[in-house]
Amino acid sequence: MIDLRSDTVTQPTEEMRRAMAEAELGDDVYGEDPSVNRLQELAAHILGKEDALLVTSGTQGNQVSILAHCCPGSEVIIEEEGHIFFYEAGAASALAGVQFRTIKGERGSPGTSLVKEAIREENIHFPPTSLICLENTHNRAGGAVIPLEKMEALYKVAQDHAIPVHLDGARLFNAAVASGVPARSIAAFADTVQVCLSKGLAAPVGSIIAGSREWIAKARRWRKRLGGGMRQAGIIAAPGIVALETMVERLAQDHANAAFLAERLAGIAGIEVNPELVDTNIVMAGLKKMAAAEFCQALRKRGVLLNSVSTRQVRFVTHKDVSQADIEKTLQEISVILK
Ligand SMILES: Cc1ncc(COP(=O)(O)O)c(C=O)c1O
Image 1 (cartoon, helix red, strand yellow):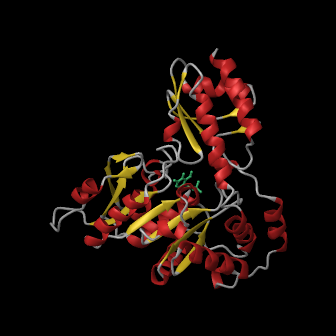
Image 2: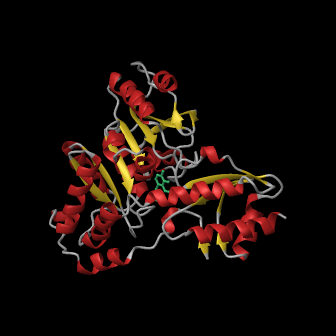
Image 3: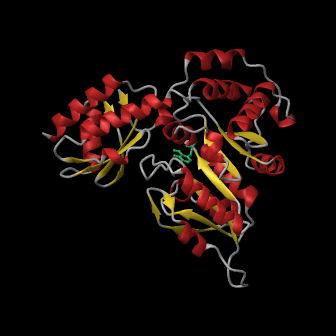
């Protein structure tokens, strides 16, 4: 099967499997797992933050971050299609007791003036604004990169109002590679950041959150409360180190494959794609004559897996386990289905 549903389906590399087998281990709840400690130090360095923490998933990383930033009854500003709002099972309201203030974005980037307007004034009737969440790259906006100048401008607004910024950087390294800047240059415009090891970087499990030493100490307690204190977690950390050290630059290949796919899809009747909107490894495509679910089912029968994102829209995600030949085959099958 050619699996274009998500970059989460990537299999760990041989080097990752070896690293798992050979990892030096200890009890990480005591802070004694050398592999976890190495991963956290490496990640903090790469992200330009004082400290970092290994968490089980992107969702856990984002939720621990919200818990460590916000009090119950406060309000979190987020772009209306943000993963934290859209896809985390209502966790922020169920666990942290916060409410969201969603605002419109342009390709996932919330406008600075809308953010400014959404920040609450001091008034006994209002929930205090406790956090601004950004997402880069932006999943539902089709892997869109938030331009660095935009990140900077948004961070300035937040700082002017003394409100922290949390960056959901599940695919931060895709943004960095696409923009030709180090990940830390993007993370610099957020107080805290979450990055996934288990998406395009192909580690089997885990995410990192990073921020100040004081904030990570708080986050560590929240992770424990959520049952995320893991013991010989070096088994997970070891492939995470391989991911950070060897898998970042190759994301450019995924981006090239996505660009090629988009260009070719744009030439197929019955499908609507704008290749100019493909910044990284995600291609969103509209279907003119067929329901998305039906299209995905037909492709599955022909050996290609794909997810629909709405009734008439599907999403292709490129990653290390999809070659250019796989893309060619996918295009062939699509042409047959839409003939
Ligand atoms: C932008 C973004 N944030 C967070 C997550 C959650 O990551 P996980 O599936 O590891 O919980 C995802 C997953 O696709 C994502 O795309």
